[in-house]
Image 1 (cartoon, rainbow, N blue to C red):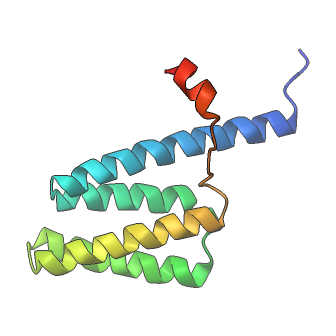
Image 2 (image 1 turned 120 degrees about the horizontal axis):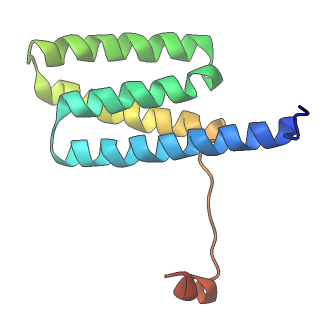
Length: 119
């Protein structure tokens, strides 16, 4: 049986799957943040980190993971929750910047005439 899928198609499909996962994680993270569910936010931050992990330089990876570990402890023992929430927000923004630098976040420009028809 011959494989008819080209390497370019596989790479494209893989990237689409990653983008969908990042979108789902981002939406959940935003919802959990609004609910002030710190454990939920932390779980989403960890998922986001894992998705873009290969494209983060080793030094930044280590620094971010150390911060995540500190926050885990604070949340586990319910210590200084204000600090933990601020730190989670900072890590969230940093991960989004890193994802953008790595090409995971793209801008979509739509023609307003087509947008009306699509909805």
